[in-house]
Amino acid sequence: MQQIIATLFIYLVVSLPAQAGATKWLDFKLSGGHIVLPAEVSGIPTSAILDSGSQFNAINTAFMGKHDLDYNRVGKTRINGAFGEKTTDRLSGIPIKLFDSETSFDQVIGLSLGHHTTGLLLGAPLFYGNIMQIDYPAKRLRIITRDAMTLSEFENINIVDQRGSGMPLVNVNINGKSVWLILDTGNSGGILIERSLAEELALITNNNAVTGAMGATRSAYIESTRVDNVTFGPYTLENVLISFNAEGNSINLKSQYSRTGTRIKGKRVAGLIGYDILKHFILTMDYGRGQMHVGLEQSD
Image (cartoon, rainbow, N blue to C red; front, side):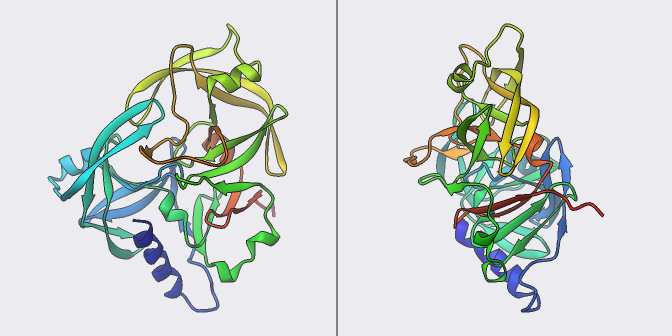
């Protein structure tokens, strides 16, 4: 799957004038904090959610049901959601049109993604092979070739590709404590951490809000509170909302959506960082090389 995505973007980049080194800016919509791109599946217009916190690409089972679509089943995969585990089909031979380019996806996971108008979830493989730039304030993104930008000269935040999972981890400081969080464009909230870390940060009080949360596989209760400051790259944000699993509820924070049976090594994952933080910034990322720049929109 990763090779297919990389091939798609190589096509997109080399089809531009040689001196350009980047695709044109592609506008996206924000829906509940999710990046939503236009796409087609089997010639049917739909929407695709960009989710850097997913190890794989997925097709919405509700979309398939609505349009009576059936694809080759090539096996089963167990996946981890934030609140549990389930087994789902792996599908192949799915005709996709994305960014005006047509291709066919294999090894796509059948997954419940809510309303049938959302057809696809595009995961971490989309970010590999080139530099991706996401401009949250302007609601646009583009792909830049590595030979067009020396990102190492501009990087201002630590990012690693978690061995065994392919998840992008960024180094964030919460109330003075350094932690590694999955950079998760599919997380519509702010920061979600483990309860053990919340205890360490003295965030557990009787005044915390408790709500239900739905993951890919099942629901759980989470607590929410605010922390004094979060440092993300060279920037510090104050009074940031942070959530964690309520007592007696478990969460899996290796990834929002990940395959089971993968040996996770490297940095310890403490949580997820999502839209409520990312929305302020322009992110320029090369996951494969572990390089990233965090910037602000330039005022006129």
